[in-house]
Image (tube, rainbow, N blue to C red; front, side):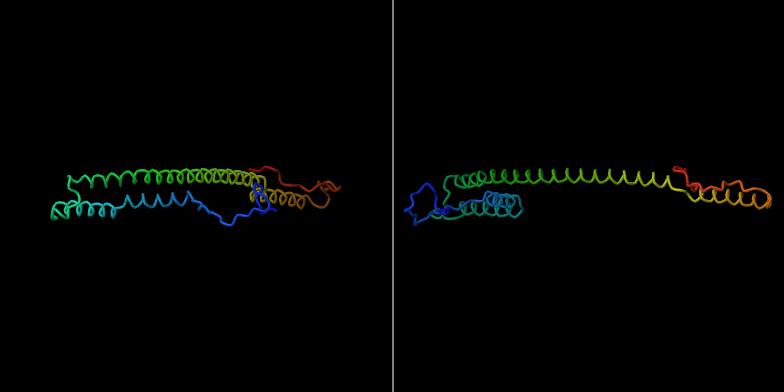
Length: 183
């Protein structure tokens, strides 16, 4: 029942179907744009110039029985006006399509710039956090100074002799750690 329209009775079947061609507006706009692009080429200017030269020379130099534009090139003016009247809307259609493409391209560029800015800001935050983490780690100079001070303490203990007590506490204490921020 899904293949039968609800507005017709059950027994009625349509034998002849008139199919209407669906016109694709994008295809007609592409066609108009291709014509408008051709109207702006040097070859079109050359063809139109050759057409006008042929028209004028034929109507001036041909015998009177073969001349088809007797009244001062009125037919030529009519032909050129007709061509211009068709060319103008086609050029406007092409310009509208180009404006639409430019608008889409500008929107894509804006989105790309926003993503790029967000990525740059993220990377700047990451670099700042890495710098901060590096500043919190023990540097080579800090480790060297700590080792020197420990070495001096050991030398002082050796110089004091065996009768001197160990100044370090005998209970287990937390190991000495590097300070959080050494600059």
